[in-house]
Amino acid sequence: MANKAIIYAIYPNNKQNEQCQKTFGCCRFVYNQMLTVQQNRHKSGEKHLSKMSANTYCNQHLKTDYPFLKEVDKFALTNAVYHLSDGYDRFFKHLGKFPKYKNKHKARKSYTTNFTNGNIEIGNNYIKLPKLGKVKAKIHRVPDNNWKIKSATVVQNRDNTYQVSVLFEYDKTVCDVPVTDAVTIGLDYKSDGLYVDSNGKTADMPHYYRKSAEKLAKSQRKLKHMIIGSNNYNKQQKRIAKIHRHIANQRKDFLHKESTAIAKQYSCVCVEALNMKAMSNKGFGNGKAILDNGYGMFLNMLCYKLQDRGGYFIKVDKFFPSSQLCHCCGFKNSKLRDLSIRRWDCPACGTKNIDRDINAAQNIKYEGLRLLSA
Image 1: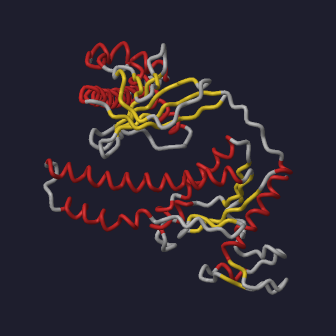
Image 2: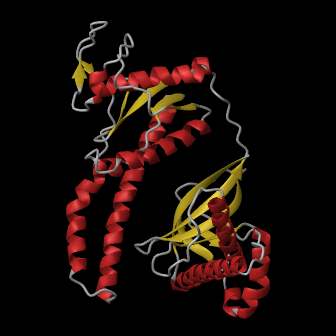
Image 3: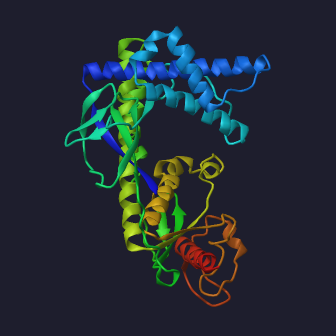
């Protein structure tokens, strides 16, 4: 069995919007209340409440003390409690920071509800959700008949648009491609074009953030001269959020199309495991370009799309000297630690005018095939 989510744009009416706002607030309230309960129990030396015990406490005490919690979807409150428990688990396993209280103005507006007795349904131009009923939606993709709905997460974005992510469960019957039959390609990261492959092709990704930078700066200057908290200030904030969202959507659209094209054409893709967060700092001088192209997001898309098709996604160690080795003879040129050298001649085998990026992509491909066969 495997899971897959599809994100739909939804357009709730005024009554449905009001119900969503209530649910967002109640989920945030329950999360904060349970965080206080857990902290008080810790201070008094009592045992930490488990996930199930915390949910029981919410049903027996919080809903009694605060009757307004009964007006919203019960699964949304349960999942809010579970999210807090997951936060504690991640903290104890040293995978995240200690859970913090959610702020009304800063916290992400979202809630998750579970499927039961047909309470979630996808129609031709609507999605049925608990407590909301049929919400107008843009159904751009219809799930297969054998896909079963597990849950739905409703999100309100900063620009006041709504989305719902519907999670499905389905039988995964993908046949793995034999290693000997895998059509392989190597990808080398390129900050000003996303990647260069081992065949010499460059993605040439448009710099969407830079294209909208002037428009964004103009909107932010307007915001600077407005009174904080005024209606005009809030309206301008939403305009800025809309520009940011447009940039993000452009980037995602390009990355989805590019990753899908590669996954359809190749059954094995070899990439370098880079630390994009470290590369985006000021030391490299191209942090804005790195953050703009979304290479990490691109690799995640490529990984799951290859896996869905039974292909291979191979990560080569980031310390592998891909750009310093000659792809023809394996000679290592230590001078290539200088990133300003873009072309070079191999003194060992005599290969002339070697392109640094294409050479690195070819070496990544060879190393990836070696790791795959091993």
